[in-house]
Length: 317
Length: 273
Image 1 (cartoon, rainbow over the protein chains, first blue to last red):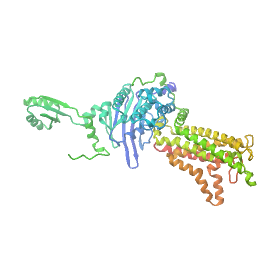
Image 2: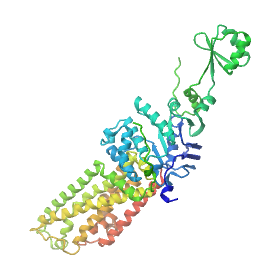
Image 3: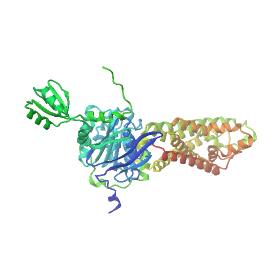
Image 4: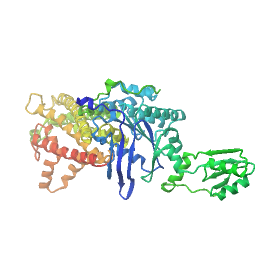
């Protein structure tokens, strides 16, 4: 195989972290994280603010040095990638651009550093919808425009691995819908897409797989469906004209019962099938029997409750 | 908006990024910010303007000066005297070339593109050295011809054919390149424009002036070996007292600049970006 051919960045690259740790004095920002980010799907990286998401991404990119452990992209340390922007595209901080440089010159300087053809600058500006402001100084950009420019920079080298740190921050609703679809498309093309957010609802709409961290520690590493199943109880909504009788029977079996809205109850601890069978056996007519999915946001709040760095006090009502 | 993002397959056979790629990138960076234009303009206007003023004044005082002063008369040095102030603008250009990366946080983006920090700083060094050399050289030659025209008729003038005059004029460019590199090194070391500018002002102006308060034997040694003073000897034709020879002085400043750059690189390489 010729040397050039060996350098073609192919799809199917993984990000692999092994016991990744970063300490700042006594503070542990990233605490022994081991995970894999796989190609062909969107992996959500989620945790409350200050959980260590940005630090982890900076460690992947070699911007910060790990105190312990290591992380590789496609089996290599970032600094050892022969043409890094063609292998990994990253948006870490949308404002990390010289304010008095134009958008196109900013992208041009990045493209040149990795021998990326100049025409690609105009292509990516068009791709993110910034072609009309290509010559404008970046300092005059709104946060949303800055995010789009950061995404354009990440796409310059058409890389198989993409990382976005809080990409929806500052985007308008149209932009949010766009970025969601865009990340899904990148994953569908077989790329490895790693996206951080502190909003579970956002990840629910975008991600296939979740890595949840709190205070630098791994909390969960599983698919979005498993995450919902495992992290919160399901409640089954039951409507019946004989609720009192049914409640008593359910409680006897150890289920948890709470009143619902409009003559209904919600039951936890029993599957809907068991509830239906029980009702039939006791001759209780059922008007409705429905499993309620736990919302991701609920599951996330429950999980990270103990690892939130800053928390408001609940107002007594 | 989200049509095919993949490059044609032929373009995906890529060669590794190289040093000359980083050089082109840094050249784009320096030429695409207005601060570069303004700093260069200030260096040229201040340098050439002040040199012309000093030449005119010195020429008018020549007749009334003493014999020993006449023996030290160095029209090449006088016609470029404004460079003493213009060098600060060149140093600031070198400082801003790297500290603006920290103040705008674009250092993260830059090091993602060029993760080899030695390559990153080396590319910046080459670009700032070349830009500083060209600016200082233009300053030196323009000031020289204006200065000699102003001196002419009042005092002896210098010409390119006289011994050491061309060396002194080329020396202005070489010295300028070192000043730009010194600024870059200090910027990399301190990561703040304010701190680096304060340091270069101290190195160029304050500390040499303070050394006058030292006992004379020590003062002379400091005067001789102070890096920026020693480096400046390459721009003179007539050698003053307590000075090193032009090339030894230049070597001293080369070593000093290399040490500062090395310290700047050590900081860049070891600390988180």
